[in-house]
Length: 455
Image (cartoon, rainbow, N blue to C red; front, side):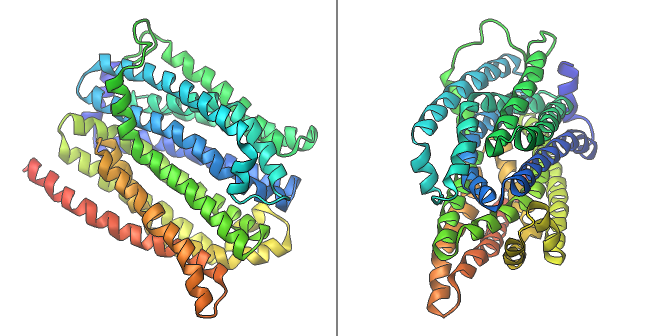
């Protein structure tokens, strides 16, 4: 369980390592995305279309909370992988303690601020007088458990970087399985509605945290809890936060996109249009989470080999990850274009909503076959600690392309006599295409540089 297990990252074949490290992440992320889909299915069928719209309103707020967890968890796990590659085990243990302390502090701060300003935040995110009740009921429970959520995701990331991808997977699957079991009990049997769905989430994460703590309390682990590490260290904190800034800003930008999108849909459409986006986005999320599992498998391999200056192995891991991610997102594209009604009916039995959602779903998925490449590329730069490039790539699709298009394209459509809401839907594939071209331009130069170092 100790050092020999970690050094395999620099010796075993890249294909077998990516399979070993990515498969648990893929299984865990697939299970998590299935939970999100099942959660929405239970709410859509058990509470109604407006509750589904309310959940869509609450999602960017949840994602903002998760973004702060990502800021700490992903940054620290990348730093740990680099430290292990450098054989600096003392610093790796210090990173572990800083993960816990930072997550507790940030989680508590977000909980207090979020609960105090909950209604104004939800209205700003696109809630109406009809949907805010559902969004509020859901987010109150989620915010009360926010510290627990942060610790859960932070320790899960650390498990992968210290050579325990399967344990990380088991913890995630445990949380998901409990969630799926508790959801129908709380929603249908106890008639708790959306509050029941939120409570199921928090209770499931609590059980998973217990499992994670058992691993980190084991003194046989290279990285574990012990005396002398429980204090914030400025150098570690700032380094971890700088590395984690890219995925943090990506999550934050994604939240801001959803906020702008919800408001544009409410402006040019109605609550049903928001529900349409929520359904399609949940389906996209299922495949994106699989790619995130590939990213999780790639991250310790790339980080370790970068720290060990084994650049050829690092590049092979990157290229193989891009290939796998492209295959996954191509499946999303084909399914969504050929039979969108199939996944829409999973979430709702409302025939009006179903009919309204088919065309927007096809438009949103039009360039999804290529989007795995920029996703992996951004994570590659995060994994090797190149925060500025990772931040730039994380922001291009969301901030530089998608938000201006969401705002500007409906106005253009309106000027030429087309329905402006179609401008909102078409902003999605256009920004996807632009982000793919940007990622290709950035990575091409660095590929040549690393190949030159290897020669």
